[in-house]
Amino acid sequence: MILGIGVDIVDLPRFKLIASDRKFIDKYFSKNEMNLKIESLAGRFAAREAFFKALDDQKIFRWRDIEVTTQLNGSPKFNFSNELANYVIGKKIHLSISHAGDSAIALVIIEN
View 1 (cartoon, rainbow, N blue to C red):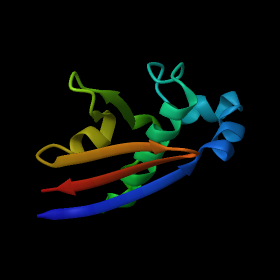
View 2 (cartoon, rainbow, N blue to C red):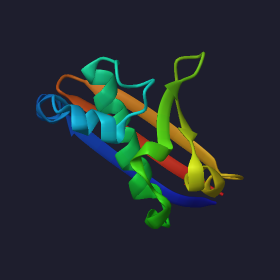
View 3 (cartoon, helix red, strand yellow):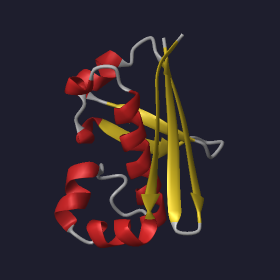
View 4 (cartoon, helix red, strand yellow):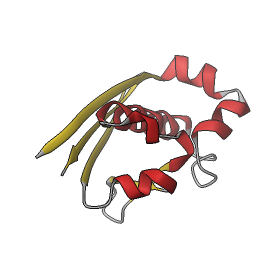
């Protein structure tokens, strides 16, 4: 059963301006993500936003509780920590990220 669906799109030129502030990077990204290319950061930010939109209880969400990694096959994957890690136990989280031109988009589906 689908518990939630979220989608988010990020405008790369606007994101580059926002991401030039180190406080923004420190707030939203893990240490492993901080040195990625801006396009990858934008996609990972969109993934976090899409996940937030798919949640049924947004009170348990904290930005730093999510890290987006890349699996061996190249597809993106979430790593969760703290209360959010407990929330996702037993749930299947689908994540897709794509880039085209000046945009990055992410789709998240949460299943029970």
